[in-house]
Length: 228
Length: 280
Image (cartoon, rainbow over all chains, first blue to last red; front, side, top):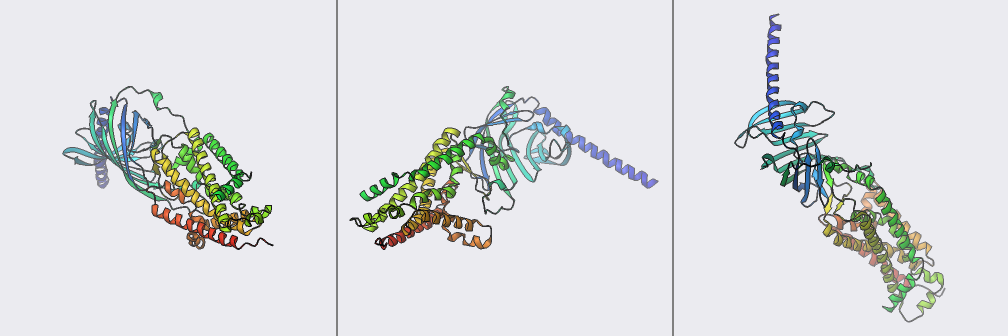
């Protein structure tokens, strides 16, 4: 009987610790959410440099529009490629209610205090991705992120500038590790199907000319859907 | 020069010469109109694998892309259209009974056959350039301009050619296509010197092209080992002008191999024609 009581006590001790850690980690995202709550939209010019295997493209420029929670639009006169993951700064996806949050470690980023968090989506139907974030807890900035989903791995490092009292990215360096499989439709007679492989590379994105809270209308983000 | 002009006039005054131009016009117009109507479907298929990871904007399905797309089918239908004239250019003299009249006149046989070969080149070049100009003009009218995005099967990713660079690359690509098609025309030309009618050279040339294409593309190791020795392997070397970086060395070797084929076939045709018995 005594053994059982001890076991329950130990269990309670650890579960209380776990619950505390959870609560503790949640407030980091809460602070992030509060910090950007006044951000209603932004427009920014982006310049993208690809250093990816098999992706022979010159530097590309475009204008990017964003409106929370997840509306985005890319406008370019020329053909433009932009990484879906990590290219568009969207702090609104990191809502504390959407994730189970684990504090992995307390660390430092430069000379500032930081934490490393692991975020597991609560509703895996809505969101498949889990994230690891390094959060500067003095400035409430996401400095690094790592996400994996559908065999894809994306790591990013963010540098910030201040635009209209908001800390927004001035540069993002992405490391992509993506699966690649050829479509059978494109195959000609006799061409052997190449084995699926992984493609890795780096994408550097520079951001300039921010226009914040300019009142972007919703219809700006509407685009005709392509028939499949 | 007069002989070349005379042969060219003779060739381009035959209605058969224009079948190729008509067929090409039909293929290009139908293809581009259907592509315009199915633009969404084409874009979806084209970009499906890339759109998982990238947002893509801009005019990807533009006139240059459509031209490159149609050019990819060049080695399938173009040889047949070329043989219609190249396979007829010498043998038609025998069919129409004018060969004796032609060969008893002062110009030497070698000058006559050279003039006919140059005329074959004019026809081949005209046909390829007609395809190119029609594709580009109709393409730019229907789809507009833009940067060219090329994907080579089996290699990850894309090649991005900036709009300003495309016309010169296309010009080189079409010159390379003329060079390729001259190798096919030379086979038809040689067979034309051997035959008394045009059907044999046309069917014979197509048989050679089809058999070589099938052998070269069969997914078996034995056939794959033969591939470097088949001239059909190099017919699509024009595509390399739309690569990045442009593989000049490969282009040079492909052009040399095809050029050697053309020269050799012409020299054989010259020898055959010089010894041709016109008395029987």
